[in-house]
Length: 376
Image (cartoon, rainbow, N blue to C red):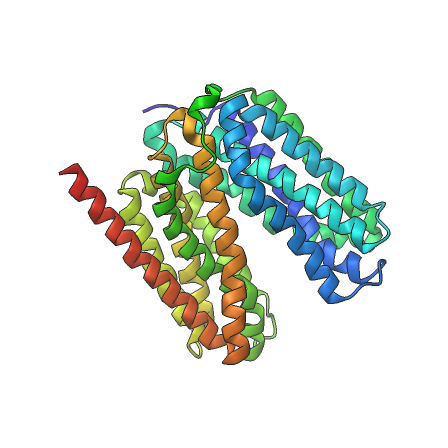
């Protein structure tokens, strides 16, 4: 069996950990900074946060194409450096337009770093251990996003500049790790690269359904906990995150032992079950754990299916296409379910998220059957 845990794998995971810890600090600090020292409204904080997602979504396909043309390393380095610059300059920003501009710049860095990072991971992972590689590498992302907010809380108690500059320093650390990683891919001829990798779209729809459903839980779990009488309203989120991290570490090899679309369909069915449980009285905690179990396998399964459609010189485009669907799911899911929560209630919104995941499950099963028919 080919070796997975190499120095290059460790460097890429370390780069992810540094980068996403910085993003976690920013997630916590931004709304407090906008509504505090800048004396702006909560709506302004939402605008500043959303600006990041807009530029990231629009530029991910272009980042994927560029990754295939010039290699992974330039975009890993450039993306992390842009993020570091954006976060450092945020410490000097004194008005909302400046914050929005810097968040747009951060989105450019995010598009480059995220897309190139996934393409590089597929380059260095043994083909028969890709699912395991995705599971283990994602721990850097999840641990970073989990550790960032508490670290941000400690830093903002000292000062806001301390939080922003620490986040910038973590991105600089990610840049150094990426520099030592070196180039992992072979740049393709310009005529061989495309903006959108069309074969990646069908499995990306399944991934989008999983993320849209999960995004609704992330947005409304604390309110649901408050509604059901929990004193610790962050408990469902903590249990969800802890379940994902623990299960990805323990069951990292499972995605390589099952066909990716079959595993993706199973994961969506588990996600649907978990969301229905969170919408049901007295089962919020159980539902959070079940949901985490489903999410454990959904992303590795769908990314394995997505990259199975791509040749080495198409991995950047496949990563850009898939990550655009990630933005659509994580952004669109909470918006859609938020409208339902406003019109009905939170439990109905969570149940609708379960229905989205169930629909994604049916779609993925259809894709799997279609693939089997073509193979026959």
